[in-house]
Image (spheres, one colour):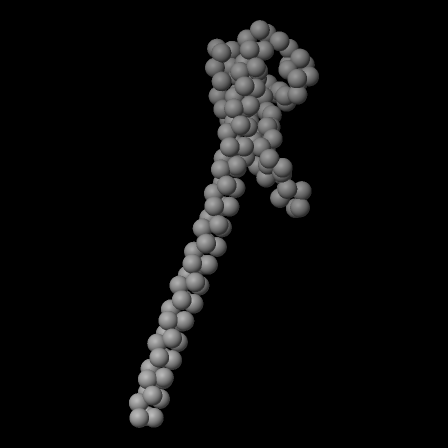
Length: 137
């Protein structure tokens, strides 16, 4: 009789141990899933902010190009355009204007455009540059 009670107790202990291990496993997976989802959310927020800031800078650069084009159409001098903060050089009968628009701390949108006498704009350079890396070199 005593042996039967002992087997019953051992059987119950094994079942209880199995249930505890299953609960711990499920809890570990739940925690890992939560941590992974949280890190993915933070990464997507950073990505959204970076894209948003880039497109804001892109819109500002397009506005500046329109302003420069209007100034050149109105035959404003290079000195006047340079006073507005743009770098202007002339090559092969074209006015080449360079400027940069801040995207975020340490990043700028570098723009270089050539304006011809036929009201034609040619984009020579339109790229982001990381200023912090250049300072460290």
